Length: 156
Image 1 (cartoon, rainbow, N blue to C red):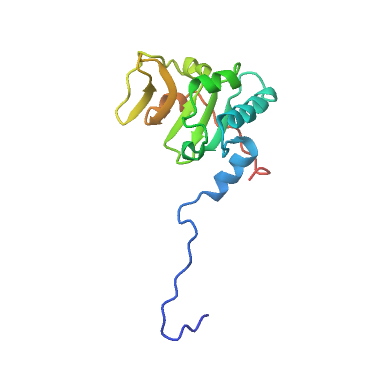
Image 2: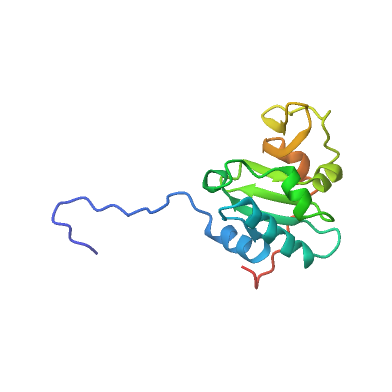
């Protein structure tokens, strides 16, 4: 009990919107892409791909394009260079967008002629080619073929 002498006491929030349980599991099973250059992201994704069984996804998280020093966003071409034989996803820190490689798009049947779904968007360059960027409801097409890594009780 706190006697505040008639004053109001409120809890102090550092971040009122967090997901500590899922963030901890992500740290165990995915690639932390909270890095400052595209080269660093590519290197960490490449290293994880080397120890990922065939057919399994290489998944990154906590990517933040506003923190990159490269002056551009991560793109499909970057992931294609880093992760050649696995489908790959790098989820933006906000969770509403992600970047995918060519293997992931092929697995999902998404190509340059795939229309944007209502409430979603596939990023395209001036020539109509996919850039790797996927937003909101368009992620569903890829999430359907991207099984989440199994999480054990020990992981939790």
